[in-house]
Image 1 (cartoon, rainbow, N blue to C red):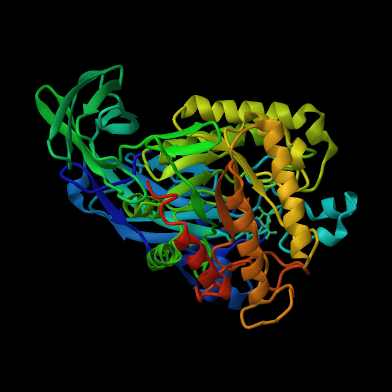
Image 2 (tube, helix red, strand yellow):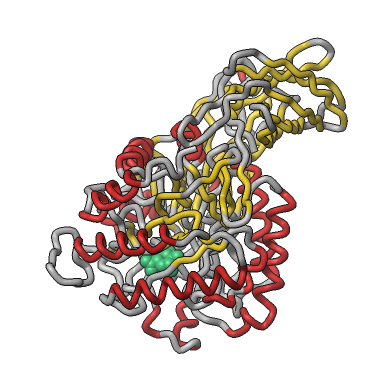
Length: 604
Ligand code: BDP
């Protein structure tokens, strides 16, 4: 799916701002026709509540009791569309609404979406009225189930499965807060009747500084025609004609004396596409693209043929008040902090991040592991729908993010078998991951695929067979051997060697860390103190760096983040090396030193 832009042929109208809002805890809204306007909601009539979009409802509306709200809520916005838009194709595009939503325009159902964290677009040409006031109403629901991605959990499972102490409120299968709401901008996108639907650019590095771009273009209903492609930005301007047949065209472009994209020099060419029919330009789309190639060779991860070592973090989209809502200043701040401590990479744990953030990473030279939200799948509850949703998720994720040079790897999920289900090892896990990972590779053969493994799944994890890179999340010194760092490092070292000798694939440590309360100190190895976190991280890094088969280290987590309630968490998961409001803990300074000493490695 193309990111919406404005040019001679395309326009966007951003509906960000205050929207009318009403919760619907009894799910009566559809029956009472709230889609015809929130004036039909008694709740709204009583309170006249407004909410900011984008943004989660939880902290914005905590004072009316929504901090832990899981259920349905309605949004309404009235807006005017200029009369000049008559005759154009008009779409509504929701950057993300978590997790399920339905959209009505002028009382008519425009469509629905059940995959959170991803954009969706609905054609509303026939129900929108340029030259008039229009109304959009959205029903958003943040409930999950066995078949959704991520999977949900029913509160009764905890007692049935004898795991009462693992219960969280709200109940989730994951360790991050299940924020609800419209999290990324809602826009009206105006495009020409005949238009570009999708563009994919795959890039490779050839000998003698040649870059190769394989460009694929899809149009909607244009039977034939051509595309004029102009690549600019390097020393020369390159031109290429691409013929369109049956709404598809493909070309190979060789770029001589190519300036390659890398984390050190994130150079982007501008790919400009013009769609031509009967000699007239009918659509135009411009895309910044970096020419680069990612490969796994033996133990090594290569960027443009050179060894690269990942130094960075697992992150979250999470901040005070806005929750999971897009907040551009935070993107600038977080990248500034990551650069400050000499990080070069991060993982979008545990779901796709905003498109705005991904483009910012392209321009700022960060290396991203892009993750699908199949977090801690429980194979006793995986059903046919889980697999269908998982594959659709991966397809839409790749469709959204395939043109970002910063995306160097797909994570098809995270920590399957977190709760230790026998069935996972009895063939179910193997069959499932074969299907999902082969599917991912069939859609994008140019990037390695991984799935971070947890301690419980351990060395026998069936997912390893299908991964190009073995990613492991380990908490020795924290959940295992708490407070005992020498024991922790010994156990980790032994396990890593065993995994390597078994699978002979490069190993990436995608999570390690310790909860840390800022301001707590000790001269001993004392959990929760700043010194303990800094020391644990340093010892892990020294060990990881001493092994020839490792390709990187990503600390868990970049910043403290909100979790569901459980006795293990003090409001937040405190494993951040920065606090939730981005103040550095001691470990941040330690990382800055450790990672600056490693300058040279990891800078292609
Ligand atoms: C891992 C998960 C991550 C958690 C982390 C932790 O991948 O989501 O937040 O552990 O326990 O199991 O801090």
